[in-house]
Length: 568
Image (tube, rainbow, N blue to C red; front, side, top):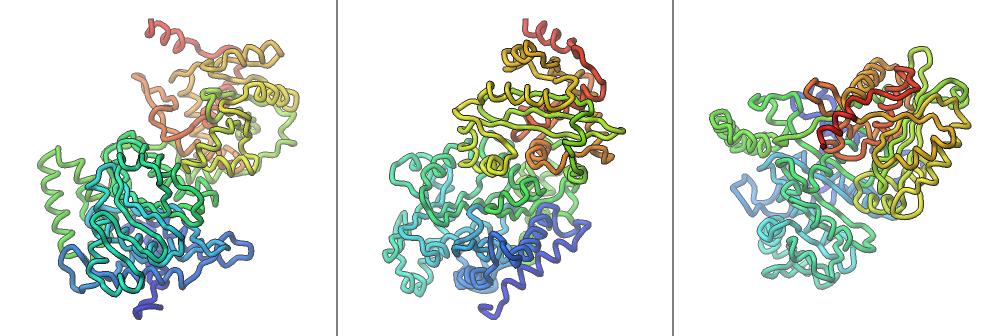
């Protein structure tokens, strides 16, 4: 306990109050999920053989440090910072969980909240704490953004704090300069850096704060900094942001990954990533004042915040051009987004056993998706027994995809390969010879009636398989073929008549799936709008399509011929 405040107790009570708010009157779904994860992890940390422990001292120390820092912007009741429970919760999470070697469990952390909830102040305090109290030789701390002015926001607040507290400078040997904060004793430096400067040599960031990551129009800056991060023992990637417009930048991927993590898609494979996300819920109305607190946790201590949101709401009602800005900045809601198709809670309930020995002689149907030679390739089987579908599959990725995905952190490919969930092939592209041998082996092993395939990128391999007796049939990639298959899959998993064995890769693809509709409202998977790979789900849908119809001949070719006529 420090400063007379028990920060661990504050964080725990805050998490419990969120979890208890089952109807979501005060806390949004995404924060409640994060709170439940924290409480579960406290229990998990006590178990023998857990990959991390929880250390109360490490949880308390950064809170105590930051509460000794001064306010440098605005008028507050106290000269020094008094952390809100939402900030205490984030800090206790970030610093309290430790790996066996004593370093932080979390190396990536996202704090997303509506504007004017002190996220930049929080980030500045965290970076100062890491500079002063984490023993990283030659620490290189960066406040990074696409522009110099944006990059200086977190850094400038930290500099103003250091300038106002002489005891801090003297105790830790800190010096402040026009464009840097340095600590001679450890060789540490803290600088703002923009996209242009990030291409310079000599970068080896230990702690990086990326403020308003939604504003990045491309992933170039993040990729440069990620590739520059070398052998740091305990790095930190700190993302603080409010929502933004849908763009091709990295924010969409990061948000999607964060939501998947909170939904439990990755199990314990993403133990390195902390998510604290304050936003209104999907079904909340924009102008329902009672829901605004979900995105604005500080409104109970900031007397001006509610008034400002009300003013913004009045303008958004009267001027449609202001609505998107209100949704983004005040509700922490993206102005446009593609909604996922699968209800994950229903999907999770279909984790029944898939006994391959029991199923091996029963008729089954398969599907093969070779849509990408540089990423995930999927082969999936489906059995229909007494009205229930059972599914099992194989996936392959080239070793280059495993390396790039691991570096980007967008999906735990390396973990999936290590656990046998995904098979790695040598080289930069998928080795189709390996897939050919494996498919033929499965035809020998199982009672496969037919195998649906997408002709795109697959014709040569499928011709070779046909020559060897494989029962291949083309599945036309249009709404008329996909729509009944998607409807059948939806009926099956919603009613619990699907068993997928809790397959985490299939769940990941399911969580990515977005559908498109044609003029007749026929559905098909939309790979352009889906945030990430959906190949394993595409094979499941195709396999269920042929299983439901029992078709062993060619499927409806009308969409295919129509597409040829359109192209001509």
